[in-house]
Length: 394
Ligand code: APR
Ligand code: PHB
Image (cartoon, rainbow, N blue to C red; front, side, top):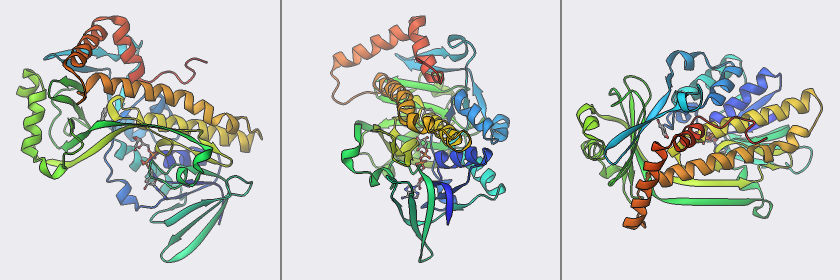
């Protein structure tokens, strides 16, 4: 088999890249280790920046998102038993975010790929990438007991944090930065109306909590929990009880509970690999970087990588220039470090850290108090949350 771009991984990054390349007349094959159904069972964050919604429109997959997604012009920060609204629209002169689950976005991209009859090889095992430091990279994999080989011009490593692409690069050729946080997020999805029409980020003495949503009838809630907690030991009742304790009196009154349709614990991590290009192989999305979910930046950073990578390939094939390819890594990393910094800072601001002294907690409260009472402070949160412009700082 031969293609122009072999894409490893059919998560949002790989599927979006495939779709943008297809629109530009560039061939791709996607090789995915799991089944399509399995990919759709993963529940992840659901806040899209304008840059991401614009890119989905450009890829021709935005119709359902515009019909079913919820536009949010602000969110609440709750601390010291009081809510403070961050008015995104006012503070950023008109910007908003879109609430649309990553699962739905993945489904839209999968359907677009299937209806264009583009090749996605699901349930491929032993995927391996070869010769990406030369001019003729290859991908090999097995399926149904047979061995296959794909020859390509480029490999796009969209295979997430545990993928094979980054793992195939000698460690002497890259630098990795990592911070693990001493807690996780216990998440519950439930078919109950959200407690509030906007998101509520909560810093309480019992730890962080987040009230999010997927629609007017489906809620997504999170609690900060110790890493040693097991999801099996959190009954639905225990979850709702603890969430109530972290909410304000209004939230306690208004919270509607119901059975959890999904419950899981995710660790929090900041992680960046430099560079993101290795000869003819390029990393994008979670394969190259992870953020803690507090700022909802994971999917949005992945989308910008994919935008820059698709532009680089389009320039290569259509304009016969390697400038985009050569600049890919530096262009992405500048934006990634900004997103990583915001996610790390917002995480520090909103969570209780086990090692913090009483003084640390007071500093955190004073910082929150300053941020929401100063227009400059509130704007700092808002402009990072909606996403900095693509050309920021250039
Ligand atoms: N071979 C083929 N596919 C692989 C391999 C492999 N060796 N290893 C992993 N994969 C697949 C995974 O099964 C997964 O479907 O790569 C895909 C990677 O998808 P994601 O982990 O969703 O990563 P990405 O597409 O970059 O999405 C970024 O998802 O994880 C969130 O916070 C993140 O929202 C962000 C977005
Ligand atoms: C979510 O809805 O899953 C979500 C929303 C905002 C975040 C993180 C997760 O910051």
